[in-house]
Length: 328
Ligand SMILES: Nc1ncnc2c1ncn2[C@@H]1O[C@H](COP(=O)(O)OP(=O)(O)O)[C@@H](O)[C@H]1O
Ligand SMILES: [Mg+2]
Picture (cartoon, rainbow, N blue to C red):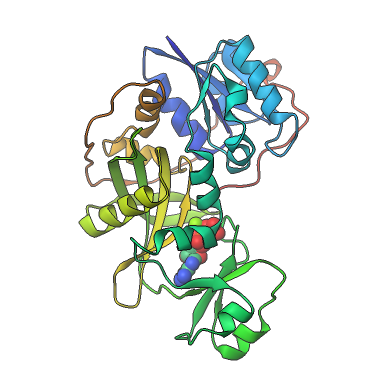
């Protein structure tokens, strides 16, 4: 049996990963979250539920390392951005378990939208991207343009900049980026790359409805341009494992790069149902199994509803912390 711990059990991605792995009879799933009310904890048997420190806490990585030892874990999967940042340069502390996450370099580039644009520009259609301030004022833009935080998430702080006067008024002390506006349709592409960085699957999705930044309805679409663009992004950042590449069509209708979320997306159930069981393939990848050359998918649509799980109140784990606020 492969013993896998999945963190972020309160989030949509965490729940989807746990559900996917529970379907395997060669995997024992441990579920973890910082919050005892995280729903995904209660998908696994009581003996396999764990509380962890918040990803921002200094105690997070040592606490996880202690779980690796106590539970004899083989694989750790984190579905939470702040945890991945904390773990990126410290993955050896989880030895002998492997952290099923992209390399520190891949994470660093993906989480910095300026570094990402610079890394991908040679091989991918990327909107011109510069820091607000003198760099942005030096460019002869076609207005409107778009501004967003260099290290943003969940669409916080994004805005359309209608003209040059508004560009001059942008704050210069907030690490804002200015970008060509991409006025077209937006896509999320779930990408899986093998140990050699070869892209095994790229599944474009339209996000038909988004609630608090999480796609709650959508459909998968076959589109070679989207699939190839997302794969080129994955290659440019040296992806091994899973990432969610967000694209949007530019003024000419071509697919262009918005950003990369280097983790499992909340809309994973659709991608899994469409034929690419990313969590299961990620466990195979990080336990040294060879992945298929290519995993295809079908066009499917999905909607989502809430479901209440009823528990004995004595079963609810008591934690000092509330749920993570960050979601994509
Ligand atoms: N260059 C752009 N042109 C048009 N819309 C954009 C552009 N960049 C971002 N957006 C919009 O803002 C949203 C958030 O931007 P994104 O780059 O995905 O950052 P994050 O999700 O980390 O906040 C996108 O989903 C998209 O709708
Ligand atoms: Mg985004």
